[in-house]
Length: 247
Image 1 (tube, one colour):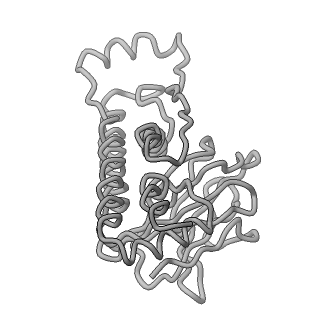
Image 2 (cartoon, one colour; image 1 turned 135 degrees about the vertical axis):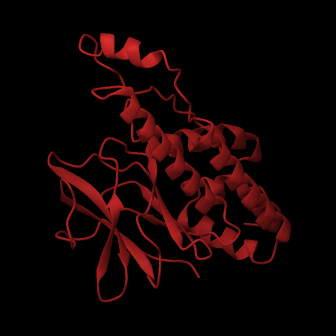
Image 3 (tube, helix red, strand yellow; image 1 turned 90 degrees about the horizontal axis):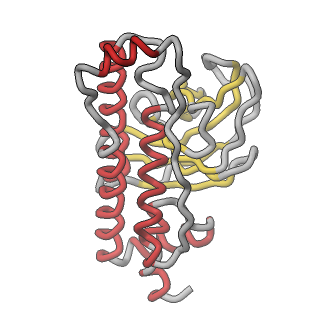
């Protein structure tokens, strides 16, 4: 792969669409190319802003309308059209739309804000989701963000993004098989001798992004396992993936 070819991969790299060998080659290129490094930071920030645009504040009258109809109608999750795009620079806009949808769907968890709850509780849930989305976007757009990508043993691809300055990490996944009934994918920080719980993945999403719970601290990597619903205090199954954080 020539240097001019590498310059065209900024968008695909931000959206974690490169093969492992391409990712390694491009990350080596980033260390020597200031213009590509700057473009990667700007594209990551754009993806974060697109995700934030999904948050809305409901009108006050919506509560009465929904509470009147909630017992009679079943709410449906939002429909997201998938967008196919190539790795050429011309396909970057479509990839941004896909990444924004993935980030927003992960942050909101596919939950209908107004189903089976008071509008006041739903508004609080929306505010929490908005904060989570903002924190997720901040990690992805951080100047010191480092990404590691791996093929998952269960199928699909996973990428962990770490910002040491923010002391936070995010996990992005594509093609993750749905867990069996009564099971959930759980994230872990690898502290060396122990695995520290770092949150649960949305069991209904095969593509998504999650802000890992808690600070990165001294963790050198992360893991993903299949656990009983509700999660476990320590891993109970072989890891779906183990990744070492990029330095």
